[in-house]
Amino acid sequence: MKINLYKCLLNLLYPLKCLICKAKLEVENTWHICLHCRRKIKINLPPFCLKCGKPRTQGLSDTTCGECKENRYLFDRAWAVSIYEGVIKECLHLFKYRKKRRLLKLFSELTCNFMERFIDYQSIDLISAVPLSKSKMRQREFNQSGLLAREIGGKFKKTVLNGNLIKIKDTPSQVALSGAKRRLNLIGAFKVKEPRLFKDKNILLIDDVFTTGSTLNECSEVLKKAGAKKVYVLALARGS
Ligand SMILES: [Zn+2]
Ligand SMILES: [Zn+2]
Image (tube, rainbow, N blue to C red; front, side, top):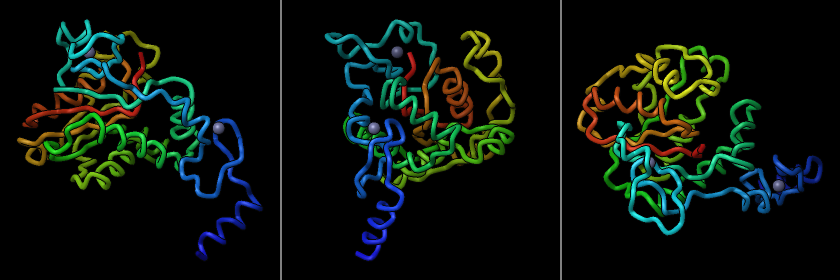
């Protein structure tokens, strides 16, 4: 009760505003964006590719996409919570580059809802995040995927093991590179510190954005070499 009163007073002095459209927010709002903006987030609903999680045209079901027919992914299956555009893209940008860490609640809620609906999480033994290199970590101060992994682990009572899969090579920004160059860049970029911790485990690997899947592929390969039984991937958003 006391906290509520304090919150209300604080809200009178410094009104909470939607981080996207600046509309005034209710005191109870924990997402830090308004309902109107939240509704604009496109959740990745089925049908999606049974291998890489890419959204599929309505009418197609239980199939894999063209890229996956060539079977180039080394993870067992991937899902993406939303489509990487508009509000979620802006939110992720604010979170990563403008340090708006209060958006973590929104990300974790979206991800946990998705997991409950579409992922059989009983078989997952542990959760791990795609790591950042040391210098990236110093520059950004936190790993967005690591924070999300911890939230999900807490909610589903799963062990979270961040820091055992590490990034040992700094790679230039992947955005401007072609698929082949991305893959070349990433060779030898990841390492497992203690393979026995991953051995025979079903791992859920968390990432913020699934773009070409090169990073996730490279991580999956390293995890499998360490003895992981299955590697599943869950990304907050899916680029095209
Ligand atoms: Zn808004
Ligand atoms: Zn696919």
